[in-house]
Length: 462
Image 1 (cartoon, rainbow, N blue to C red):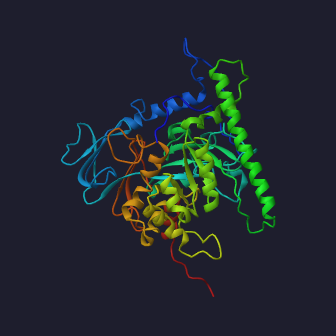
Image 2: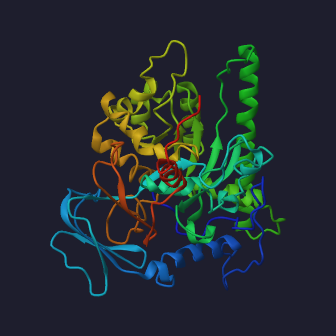
Image 3: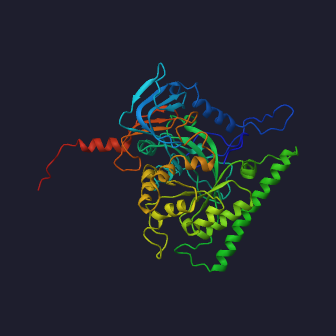
């Protein structure tokens, strides 16, 4: 899956307002001379700003590093003992028997392992701090259709959960909004930066569509006919939304004097594969319905959730449907399901030939991403496949593989150095590079651990 080269997005990084995802605001519309090009909005400026962050214009990113002597796992070939060179925020070279460039800061990785930074394919990092405290949650907006909203406008760079996640090797994530039929656009960010602009890789990376479900909840006492009626109505609204976006796009391309509609302009981005869709569905019937709907509409998509995907694994493989799976460390979905349902789901999908990736879909638990993948290994998922599912697979599914996921020349320099297997809970991340910047692994969890570990012993009086 490759992304279209034209500038997408109508949103922009605007000032954070607690409790809301801010809509985009256009500060000027210019068109190329002699052509009807895409409007130049603040989103384009933000995207360009993100590109500058990864270039030589940023002093932090301009530093050259040579990570030398470690076992390098590029995820694009066989491991080797050698050197990874980082320059201007990107991987400049990786190979055995390489000399460190003149002026480079040498990082001794002898006896350790070098991997691409881990990628939490869908999370709430930066959008949610404390789930039970409403004013610290900016993941949801009012209304059912919000294609014009970008998660980046609400990301809080100073979240205490971001350093905790990156200390465990999480270097990038798709921070995704939630709620409604169309929640908005997920933003691709690196987990380091004083401002959102310093973190951004792609502010409008994927559209989040919550496909309607036919399944009834635990307290749902509606008859089947009523659930079916509600489902048909919800699907019809999605169809109307896409039809309106298509009509709007045609009118603009034809030069018609159509009144500008930011929602339809944003919605039109997913037509013809221009922007990938995160298609949220979990039950096997819901996944099948969602896939048939998206394929019928010509969308470029990945299923997000996929708890019941193992039941239709062969069907998904035949249609080359990628699946971004939620946490494996979770309870069965029903009283008749095995306790191992979530553990075995990834291995069954992989064995059938389905492309999979892992995501936490949370903020506080993003740090557990490697263990979600590791939990599937004893239940049939090969270790190499588990590692790929938290590094390069989601990037390939969503069209970011030219920027993320492997240690290859030209990729964004998200790199971790570890003292063991990243899937093992006792492994430590000893060095961390995000967007080409060397980042500390200090975090609130560690500081509290050190604080109370140093607490002097006291006897409790009787």
